[in-house]
Image 1: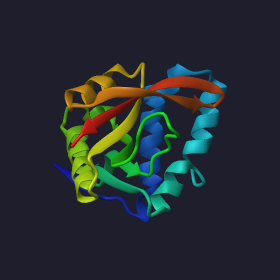
Image 2: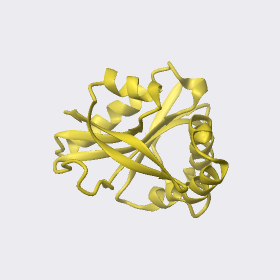
Image 3: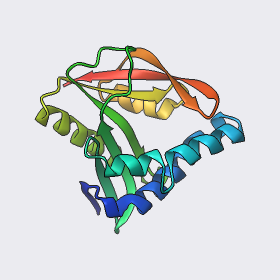
Image 4: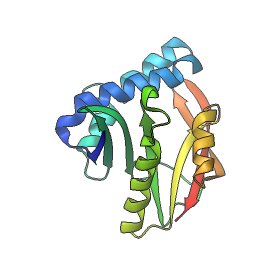
Length: 171
């Protein structure tokens, strides 16, 4: 059985460990080791972006748990776009990660539904997200759920700049 709930500050260590593991499994091959290490140092750990956002009321997290262990999560919050696409009336889905062992279980779709509900409760008319152009599995998932490519975003992994696709779904 999979349980879903909002994240709280005491989830930081478990959430951070799961997110780091999934990020490395998905992206570690995509850049030189020094760039991967730089990104991981900035994003994860006690002073990383993930835990700072968990403590920031501008961000909200939904967790998926199996037997008390985090197997997936999504994070919504303020946009970081700077003119790449219009952002008025949108909610930004920053991350939706699912442990590879839980792929195909419906966790990602459930977390995405939570995001739709969150956006509608806030009066938004659309959701924006970014996905790495080489992450074919995620791109197919988002396309299946009605997201379309509306722009490009330069994502920095260490010193490497990657092309992320900005995708939008109307509610």
